[in-house]
Length: 169
Image: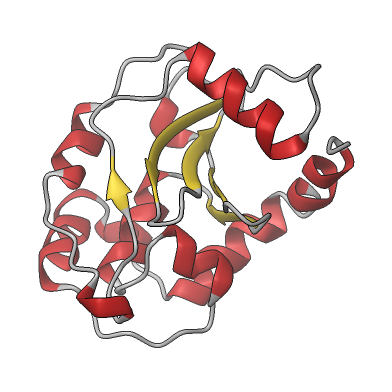
């Protein structure tokens, strides 16, 4: 998989994220993907499994505690933006949160980041005007609620969590 950071992701990451003392989005975007070495180190630490290299993950951001959001490169396509997006928390939280980048942007438009999508998938937040404008511009056809986005991803990849937990030592 090509490790070139998509321009559209960089554009999204340029939008200011307000944590709002815990009432906003808990996400710190990166402007590059983790290197292969950083990703390998992380997956080994997260799973305690030294045989993993994490090459199927492209990490592009984190929450305040060090949980990571990543593209999970599982589809047979070279288009990173078509890959599902997952979150792996620093305390073992885990979930698939979007089928693709276009669904992912609607999480933010709905006031929810990767951490909240896994930890509080039913949380009701006001829409974020800047992310809403971005989503309406770049992914209008994917407009959906947080629960719809997460449920679509989970129904396509129902075993993601179970399969990854089985790799843990």
